[in-house]
View 1 (cartoon, helix red, strand yellow):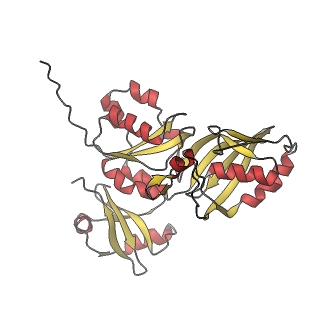
View 2 (view 1 turned 90 degrees about the horizontal axis):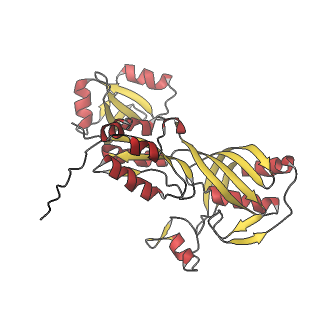
Length: 314
């Protein structure tokens, strides 16, 4: 008779910045890393399609409480758009449904068109997406030949930069708001150029202030020991790098962690004002003595600090 000893899961807290490879879904990437770190609790923020690569933050333990704040942040992508070919899904994984040889031969034509895509624009989410209708992802309806009416949504394109144009491939760097579908953007650019297009390549290179610089790929993580894997986690507050910061004394830290409202000291008010903080906003809160991250607080016009989300590491 054989006996198998079940290894206890590691209770760990922090963020791992994964460089997701081509062909792996975000969920499968999550499962793989969860297994490698033997982690008890893990989630991700900002889904990437299987054919897309790049920055995928994985949140462990208490970090999962704050993952939704990063989902709200701006995104940065590098994309290659294939002009002249339209596909069923808007990307390379779909069946080709149209060819058009009337591709622009001048980058100036494309530059004039791209002006129309700066600022606040509307998009209709694609059928081949993870958005749900009656609890079922839209892509499952699409695969069954069913089309669901989708609501128009507004997103913001802050900047589109042409990196290269080698006919028929247009390479762009895009800074956009949350909820932007680069596949839809590619198709819309193709429509406005009159030749059609689909997304050939997509790589997420940034989310808010997070970049690929500190990312690890799966092959590297596999070579690490379990200790090295866990040591690769970065602090939870990296998810909130765009938030203002305040520091509390030991006494006020305890009161904050007990959910009490606090009036800020003149010192903290000065720091916030100097940093350009806007009232009625959220801040990162730390213990001044040991710089321990305590959670997120909301500050009103009277500089009253209200706990919003707290960590439970004590």
